Image (cartoon, rainbow, N blue to C red):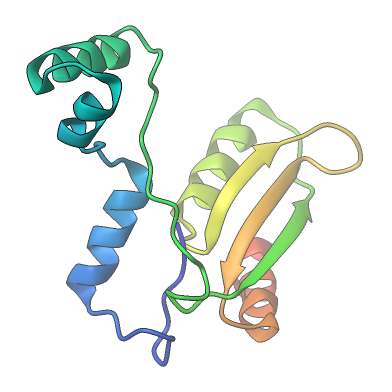
Amino acid sequence: MFCVMAGTAHVLDDVDRRLLHRLAEEIRPDLTSVATEVGTTVEDATRRFERLQADGVVRECVARLDPAAVGVPLTAFLMVRVVQTAENYGVVRQMLGDLECVEEAHAISGDFDWLLKVRAVSLEEVQSLVTEKLSLVP
């Protein structure tokens, strides 16, 4: 996930943004070229790929986006401390999942509870995320 702001390196419309979000989540490889490379038929490669997905060997296929090309050149890592209760864990996890700028959220142990990987346009955007959104986390 990432934030895409006006004035990015490439002009992206709503369809572009939705497509990129979807591709970042899951993309299917070109099995025609894969079959040729490994010396099998497209049908066999497709069957094998679907079996590997069904067996959980292939969990996902993703498009790796260039953050600068989509207008979010800044990567920030934030450490968050929350009130430790079982019900808070689910609430916090949902809140973090709803923040588009948060690319990754990891529950950790130690002095902090979450490590967030954030993509942003600027330091000001990161500061706004902290003061306006993360301050709402229990």
